[in-house]
Image (tube, rainbow, N blue to C red; front, side):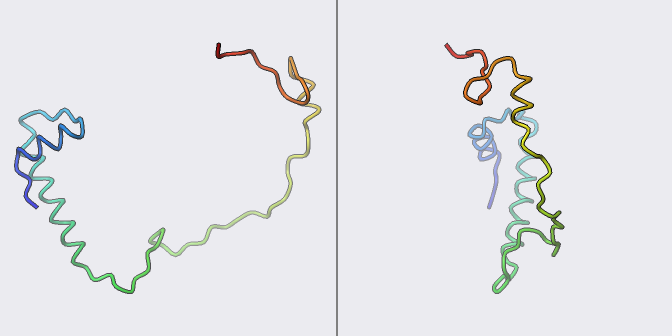
Length: 95
């Protein structure tokens, strides 16, 4: 895919990027290189290869599922300045 300077300017405008005029040729060249790399990657045969979430076959070690926090509702509610029906009351912020 060819990226001429006009296409780079249009793309920058659509992406709301402020691209200085002197950088347009360099960006066009970089986009050409990126698109050629994408074409190379597209040419690689991937039939029969399953998609993977991570390139390394790792397992996440999990800790045992044990209750560590006990019900402290009464203690926390006692320190609140205002409560009603087991809920914290806060000042109204939206009028």
